Amino acid sequence: MEPQVSLALRRRRQEAIPWAELSDLTGLPPRRLAAAVEDLSRRGYVIESHPHMGLRLLEAPPSLNAEEVAWGLQVGRIGRRVECVEEASSTNDLAWEAARLGTAGSDGLAILAEHQTQGRGRRGNRWLAPPHTAILCSIVLWTPPAGAEPGAVTRAAALAAAWAIEDQCDLDVGIKWPNDIVIDGCKAGGILVEARPGPGQAIPLVLGIGINCSQRVEAFPPEIRPRITSLAILGAAIDRTLLARSLLERLDLAWRRMAEPDGLAAIRQEATLRCRTLGDRLTVVENGVPYSGEVVDIDPEYGLVLRLPGGALRRMPAMTSHVVPEP
Image (cartoon, rainbow, N blue to C red; front, side, top):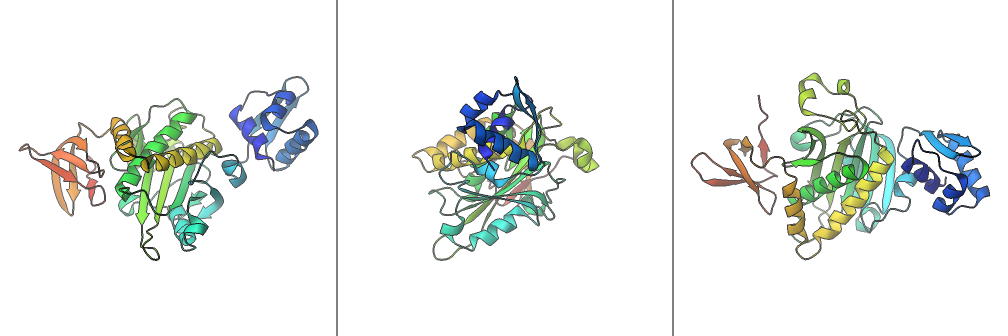
């Protein structure tokens, strides 16, 4: 497979690209380009060819392809290796299996699945998505930058996911504390960071990300439909391959920025600007005790800061607190 050809066609989907221009874009001579197009057709890509107008991608296979996702990614760590599977209990489970290989064998590995039979979200919630409708991705990360606790990683990942979605479609993406990606007030994605002890002093993290892409309303249980959405419901015609590539590049950028001087503070500032929870009146439970108040800030460790009715401020850590849903 020549992934540079399929990617060029994806980026200009529904638009014809002249043969000569496609040859320049991909760096392939005409004979090799023709062979690559024939190979893509055998793999299930529906490509319209016109002697004067050129080539146009009409349809691509439904599954993500690791060669396409990984080809030419501008990354230093996250996405250096990419694996795509049709089904998994959970991509986080596969990532933890890979983490047992140690740093050299797994650091930066990104695993994407078309379907999860036991996909999980925060606080034991299930993550449900029909096959081929979402980005379901987990990444193995070793030795996070100093100060990058799981809460800070969650914040950076949510920011990177917002960037990636905006790279691919004209939507205004926000973050709902602590781990939701929201658009027009509805959840479009989520983040789950898990940490477990590793050999020696190393502590690996597994970063799981889900983004709803092409689901229709009926794909979601009726009880959550008012609070959840997908990019397709919002009118975006998304290519999951291009979104997966943007996501890995943006995550890698956020990870590098966290290691820079004042990088954590810069990410915190930008993520706070996107926070859709600021100013809301919420009830938050910490260790079984409910607290109600106005959200006035997000602290450096990614805790929610509530102003209680008496005026006192209380920090609600992301790892031990959760918002009580509205009735």
